[in-house]
Image (tube, rainbow, N blue to C red):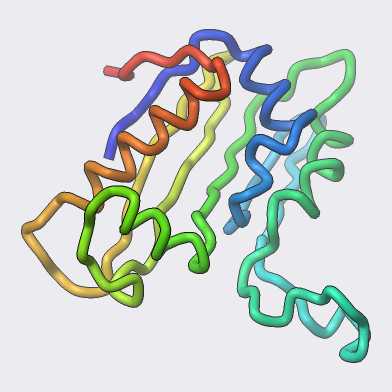
Length: 166
């Protein structure tokens, strides 16, 4: 796990809310505090949709950020900066095999409970932390290390400057 302090909040927020940069992730949970606190449970509610509808994500447990981004933007935008927000993202299960193979890891994707990216804004500071959940105990930290490197590369590719937080 690493913690990264985002150096240019405005640039990060542009990627976060106005572009498709984070659309590959699923949202586990989120909250935004403005004049009140808005809480989001990212659990995909299958019953909301007609079972015969096309393009319904029935195999999903969490909601893709692409479906929530505009709603969150409407809550966050305005004349006043939010007091705080927190979003917990998870790399989708279908992306795990590619992530593992591209990092030369032989870990079974079924052994990974989640690769997490936590985004937290508080006291006018933006902090990202990584996290991994494995279904079995291991002393091998190669998945953790690869995920940390992936997130740092992801930010660099987007042109978002970050430094290791203390």
